[in-house]
Image (tube, rainbow, N blue to C red):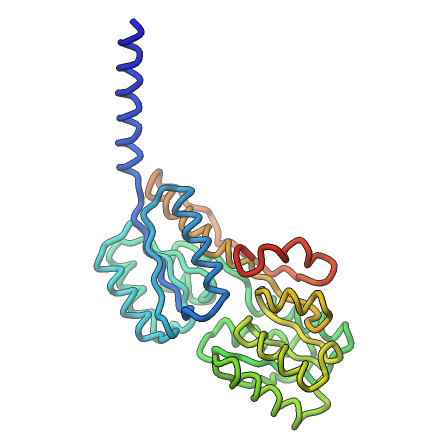
Length: 308
């Protein structure tokens, strides 16, 4: 009897493994983040964590330099694989709409994340996971104004990205001012020099917004070199080690955290469950915004650049 029970258990276990294997989703994640942008390192960590937790077969791809034409080609290549699900960011629908629609027309469930909330449903994505960018920027503008900031400027390192444009416009509206956006590159020294030049030419600037760590880190360095660190109200989107240190030492007055770990993690889980049992959330998911200040920075400090 004991041998029979053991044999039956072994058969049940093998059947369970077969069923799990049948439901193992093949998912491709394609984002626009460059290899040098620390923000996307957290997203990649989240994708890997979701793959491990679900057992799904997940591939993460991105254009190494952030080139959107290369990203479009990556989406087309992913579609050719006929995966069980596709996750994409949509920083510029003019370039990416065609490949995304082609994937959807091929019957591949697509979830957009991070950027593209305004076009996600129109393109046919099943949902979006991200932050309402205009509202987040407006909240930042209101906070900067409340801290005494005025004559604001928004430094944008991805002017092609509609989400970052929304951040800058929201910031200006929250400040109660006209949009003042300065386009910068993604090179640390170049951004730093641009910020120094702008602040030198516009000494009355009392509030600065940087729309991501790529722009914030050199802005911190620029304000320190100018001797204005802590005096100018500096707000930054997203988190990274330098931004967290800036909050601790008073150089950065707040960070707007869109919790990008959720943006990488949740779409994989949703697509895995959709493949497994056909379930989908009824609505898109807002992953942010949340404000990180001196009041709560210690809670996230150890995870900055890893899971926050």
